[in-house]
Image (tube, rainbow, N blue to C red):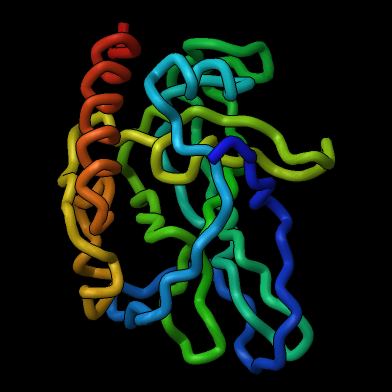
Length: 203
C-alpha cells in the first residue's frame, strides 16, 4: 500500500445524535466495527523518516476535542494537545512548544469508541516519539504518519497480536501501544519501535 491517507479533517456524512466532548471515558465501550483505510504501511524506520516532516518526542497534555458524530456529520479525528519535549528532525517546532495532533478515532452515534485500522489512542501524561506531517490544508493539524506505525511510547507499552474489537472498554487499552490481529504487522511494529527508540532516545 503506497498511498498516504490524509486523515486530518476527514468527514463522514451520517445521521446521528451525539455531541462534542473533550474527554474519553475509561468505561466507553469499544465498537465491534473495524473500519479499514488505505494508508502507507512502512517497510522500515527509513520509510517513516522519509514520510515525516517532523520527528519529535512529546508529552500528552489532554484532548481538546474527541472526534464525534452529530446530526449532520462525523468528525472522525480526535484533537490532542501535546508538549514538544525534544525535536529530532524538522523545523516547525522548538522544545517547550505546544501543538495539536490529530488521532484517527472518535465516539460514534452509539456512544462507542470507533477507530481506523485498530488505532490505539495516546494516553494523557505519557511520552511518545511521533512521526508527523501536515494535511493537505496548511491550516489543519498534524497527522501521525502511517497511523499506529508513527507513534511509540517512550516508557514502553504492550504490543498485542489481537484485534482491538475483542476488548470491551477503552480502559482495557491502558498501557497498550499497538494492537493488531496481523502477526506480520505486530512483528514489523516491534522491530521499528526498538530501532526508533534506540536512535531517538532522550539526550
